[in-house]
Length: 416
Image (cartoon, rainbow, N blue to C red; front, side, top):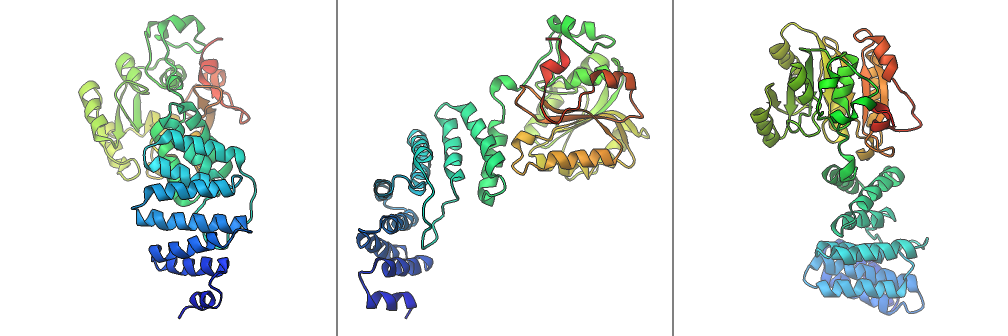
């Protein structure tokens, strides 16, 4: 006979003995039995609001496992809120319940109330799977997307990463990382800053043939930067890791189309690979950037050439882009210009940007511009160059290192 049962027999109306016996049954996955004792705990706790609240929450957890009493779950959580409206846990569970039912508006509403009302509260006597206040922010971020508040959703994810990144549960880190990748960390009008010929007079960094360019394709003027540093070089070479689609936000389409550059792309998404092959002249390889023989690819596409003009690194998430660095044979190949998407705003660990900078510096590359963004607030990429391979006068014209701010691409590339 368990200690919990003996204590209950000796004092059947003690709320704490009922709570602990319920917890004993709960650990054995006897949820129906456990719920009865949790309810008794709540019933006998009239003078202890926190204990009554805990008993109701534990009952809700039992019924959630039983999965056949949804309205009971909902009502229990509302009762818990009525007893302790300044505690955050019931708001969190109720938001989760509504989200699971596809009722994102009610879920969003309860996260708002919970975040407004909560205060520091006493600890529970038994385990309650509440991650902390960031759980309410996470539920709010998820539901904001579905109730027509996409930018609030993105901002909330950034707030969670910045403030709670180190304390999030692993499963929540994965949710945040995946959701940020899925919905992006920029609003729709931030995704691409497109150059058009009408901007020519404002273009700060002109190069041979720049007056003939009708439009570019890059997300943030990467193609125009490469052409400036090489002064409109023709027949250049590139490696495009993370090719994506053939033109939209693509960094090599202009190089291939207007300047006859040759190179190859690498893309893991087969549908994008097929689209690329149908619409671009240069080849693209279907493969995983973190697990492929780059030396074989370089020999196949460049022969004995060991100096390549442009390397793009842009995979997702940030961990994979960083991991790909260690697969590339930098000891045998040098790159004149590198654009590296560190995706700082989407990196839950907030670590891969600094790791990548240490990596490039150790190989002798120098930072050209740090923290490129399509708005003054955003940051997703660094630009690098090899000092032995580029015209230093051109480098000095565009170089801008300021770790106290992001570099808004329009201000960097165009006269304002």
